[in-house]
Length: 355
Ligand code: ASP
Ligand code: CP
Image (cartoon, rainbow, N blue to C red):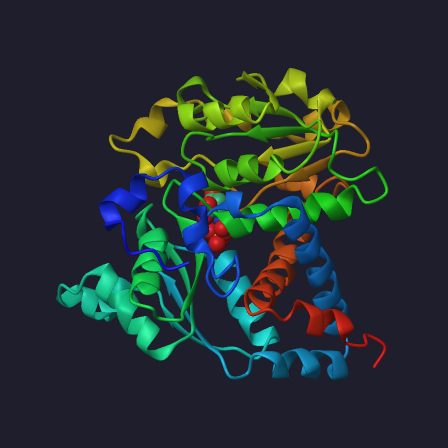
């Protein structure tokens, strides 16, 4: 829906429920900005599509069929904040589907250096490409880009690959996909106890994961963080509004034996105003080898990565360490997401994997 009645400043303040319809254009995922855009049905479709793309990619005939699907499309990867896996997995996801990519990562080589605004930079990308995948420190930029392109009737899709401290919706997709795989024979994600550990105030992966978890039944969340890095009040209100059971604590060790998922995160000190992270003892939020005996035998340990010392590398060889699989799942679910945005799901699901 194209809706011109709101100016950006007004639009920005609307509650998600009201502005949701604005993000529907060619389909309801023309702009992927918030994790709340995904309901359970869509998640299931994306997981099935990711499984199928992974399967097809194993042989040349399957990979060639995928390559032809979107070979007429071009994408810009606009990453002005650092990234390794989100950038690489999107880049490769585009290539799996035959999409040509161009990138802008370093602001010093673009005309932003000459004073061009981020909005004009985005309009310029839209002059040459069909899809913009963007990671920026400005929390509002991906949303504003969608508003702007929609208002100008430019048929260009947007994916938020990390919007400052706010959201990382595609991280939450790969997180849910990873849990879905891990608990396939254990009644799925419903009913699980999930600990999210670390910087819950500024971590966008944690915030988006909390929004995605709403889609599952009878989840118990244990939110474990230093006192000064607890979830923000709006997230607490979201959990209460949606009747999701949660507790907040700063005690990692005595909660480990309750968890089916232990989701570790890094302190987000790039958002410090006055070096305040230096005052925090984060070592109590590190998982050590000695903790392994406290963790359930069939629990999984996750981390969006990159890690510092949150998970000791000695844990990597434990069968409960799922973070490297989690990282690999990112490429498949992102390929599935892009294919879905272009309405290719039926075509892909009908491809013969046996070719
Ligand atoms: N890579 C994730 C993000 O960009 C997590 C992190 O950097 O700590 O949000
Ligand atoms: N998980 C994640 O977003 O990693 P990068 O910051 O390396 O992209």
